[in-house]
Image (cartoon, rainbow, N blue to C red; front, top):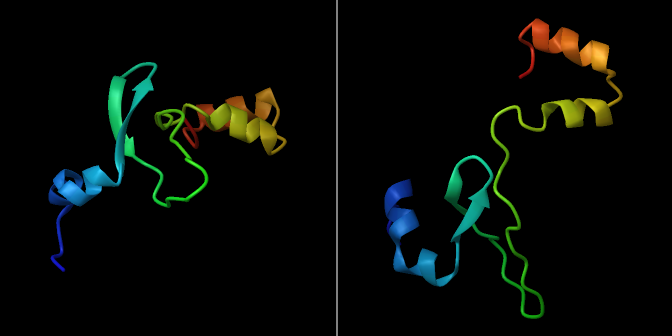
Length: 83
């Protein structure tokens, strides 16, 4: 088969027929296209439920889950290690 670049692949009829590109609502960016769920199942319909986070949007929550306290997170942000 043909080897497509990203733009052509996203516009390809088969990509559209398989719902490989779907739109999600992003709180800051509005409606944005994103990749749909790549695997299709006969008895369930997995779906993309939310848009991807913007750069750094979840950093503090992830660091807290890893055991960092607010002071340590503030130090990482001040050192420009994380956003």
